[in-house]
Amino acid sequence: MPITRRDFGRLAVAASATTALHSSSLFAQTKPNSKFGGVQIGVITPYSYHNLPNDAESLLKFMVADNINATEMQCPPIEEWAGAPKTPPFRPAGPPTGQQVGVERQRPQMTPEQVAAQKAHLAAMTQWRLSAPMSKFQAFGKMYKDAGVTIYGFKLGLTMEMPDAEFDYAFNVCKALGANELTMEMPDGNTTLTKKIGDFAAKHKVWVGYHAHLQATASTWDEAMSQSPYNGINLDIGHYTAAGNHDQLEFIRKNHTRITSMHMKDRKYPENGGQNMPWGQGDTPIKEALQLMKKEGYKFPATIELEYAPPTGSDSEKEIAKCLAYAKAALA
Image (tube, rainbow, N blue to C red):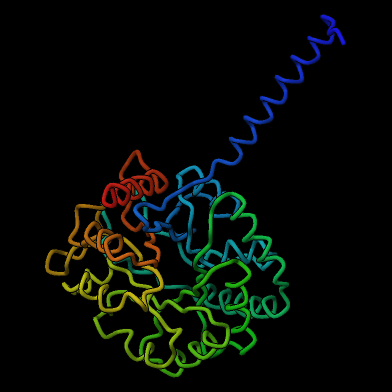
């Protein structure tokens, strides 16, 4: 059948449209990738993107733009996206801006009104959590996964004042998001609480990573780990350094099977002031720790936690990009 000039024109337009559609599809399939040399680099959100929008959609856009494909997420953006009561601004979020690099931050004392508001919010959150559908969190995890970002950790602190159903809720959310660890601050000296948390972790077969600050020593996690095979270490190598420990790499080698994830920041030893520093300017062996993970094939993720103050002319997103570049170079 002969092709007329008009038919040829139609075919050309159709071919052009198909090519454009294919190109658009390929662009849409471009995903972030922050896994270098077999080591997964992630970022803790929203904390690291301080002084920037911290809603779920904005955080996802930041990570995709910054080529970060994995995150440990604190609970507010996730729960608020799922319909929870919005968290009142009890305290400023994240380190301050400015040229000066900060030392260990002292949280401002809350006013009686803020304490009352926090108590009321916690009660409202408990009530909301006990009826929250897991389908909401599954949808959240899918939204992130579709954009190329996996959620490996969900941070929510558990206390003895919470009902058992709220413990179940925390671990169920982890599973719904696709995370394999629940992270929280180490409850100093409260072995009854770590035993209870560990029992719930074993029930759900989800890791708990306990995060320590300047109280960290080589034995900080021993009691909790002895209580449950699912009680683990959310190691902060920067805080561990600022606490005066010089055995960072030895500690990682010894405990690598119980480290659920590792927070990365650069701090000085206490004898040198203990400050947070831009990566590569402190005493923390970030490069060596990453290279150890690569050499030994450790599978736990390394999490960027931006805690030094961005210098004038920069912001937390730009500094996170610098941290990621430092990690990539260390693993090259």
